[in-house]
Amino acid sequence: MQKLYVLLIFLLMAVGTHAQVQTGRDVAVTDTKSGKVRGFIRDGIYTYKGIPYGRAARFETATPPEPWQETRSSMAWGPVAPLMTPTTTVNDESEFVFDHDWGYPNEDCLVLNVWTPAIDDGKKRPVMVWLHGGGFTAGSSQELPSYHGENLAKNGDVVVVSINHRLNILGFLDLSAYGEQYATSANNSMVDARLALEWVRDNIANFGGDPDNVLIFGQSGGGAKVNTLMAMPSAQGLFHKAVNQSGAFRGGFLTRETTRALGAETVAQLGLDAGSIDRIQSVPFDTLVAAGQRAIQVVSKRLADGGETVPGFGLSWGPSVDGEVLPYQMYAPEALALSKDIPLLIGTVKNEFMPSLRSREMSYAEEEAVLEYLGNQYGENLENYLAAVKEAYPDDTRPTDLMDVDMLFRPGAVHQANLKSAIPGGAPVYMYLFTWQSPVMDGRFKAMHCMELPFVFDNIDRCDQMTGGGEEAHALAEDVSQAWINFARTGDPNHPGLPQWPKYTEAEGANMILDTQSEVRNHPDQALLDFTSQNQ
Image 1 (cartoon, one colour):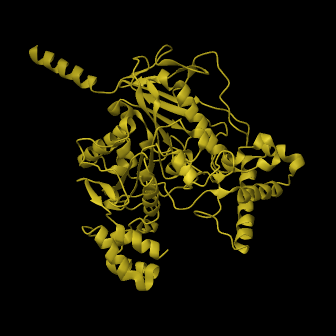
Image 2 (spheres, helix red, strand yellow; image 1 turned 135 degrees about the vertical axis):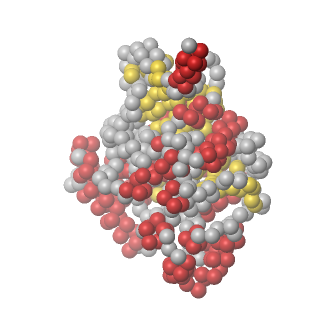
Image 3 (cartoon, rainbow, N blue to C red; image 1 turned 90 degrees about the vertical axis):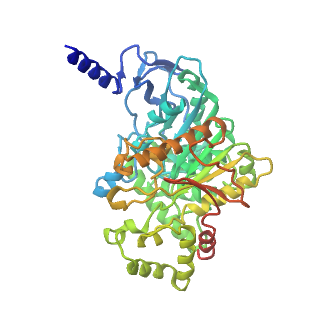
């Protein structure tokens, strides 16, 4: 009998360790300005998905949603922005690593998600607003399992928000020359993001958050969106701290002259004109995309023939200096002044878009093949390149490590950190370099683009196909996520789990190297940065 009693106690304790889900008509109900919403509670975290924060006719400025009377169920992901090229096939191994959730597309995609520890305790928690990657043309708030905010909210006693918004041609086709109703069309994607931040300002207190302590953070295209919001006058005051993860570039925004030319050519490709422009709102999405891509080719050739260059990676859908939403170039003194008082945490991962992932043969290439590849890239400067890489990473041993060091994202991040940290009386800048190497698939994926995301969100187990799920990864995730949480709370990422993290200055060049044994290194890859700037 005693053994049976002990076994029963053991079983009850075991059951108690599993996450409990609470649902029901009166569970997790709270107010928004548009009406009540109902979520669910898992393991003490309140979760809300697909809450509308805006509505908009195609190419028009978004406005707050229509109010609703009944409590709105908000328990499942909302629609995602349509993609120009829907995914129909994937590479098996890389898809295993990323484990995408593509969602369901709908142009009415202005929705957001919230994770919070409580909704009725009167606390004012830091708010962390996530801007997803995918450039300005793809992605969603649910695309990667790493984006899930439950663990971050639970571990940090913070409120996590993620958003969907218009992308690609729907978010950036410049029709401003065709009437006032299209005044913001060149930057509607970012106007949507601003509206989401206004929703946070007006509603997040009902979700246990502090509207006066809002962090915006994003990776890749999401990091570029962070930079764009920092340069947007009308977004000022809606956020108070910023994190840019692998999303800083030396290039600037498109110009109004270019975007209006692209808009006019798209209209012409559709057989429309100023008198029939409103018909563009009912053109099938696929037809619209095809016309836009033809227009990009036409305008790109026209610019090239005229000797003009387009900032960044060539003509594409993205933000532009329109004189209204974005009056300044990203790094213009006026734009930098707008975000003078915004603390910035910025960095990249070591390997980002690795050449070795282009084929299985390159992933496991021996030194001779790697040196042949690099020789074709750098010619007579090969030895200088190799010396710079070995100076930056003296402990690397794999031949492919010589060619997989990122110099696409890293220079832009250092450039932005230099500019911002030099502003007299400005808020602090902290810089990191994430170098931890994933063991998945024989270590083939290294510290690739997106690798830091499971660590920031403390989603190691949720993303075990990317991280391997080992103790080493869990320990680093605890340190990384706590740094982001502390930065959201105070503007300073320091905590006892990491070495003292100094503020970044161009002179000192302090970088927190995030790895199994994290350390601070000053100018860790300066020779490589110098080489890259001299050989572009």
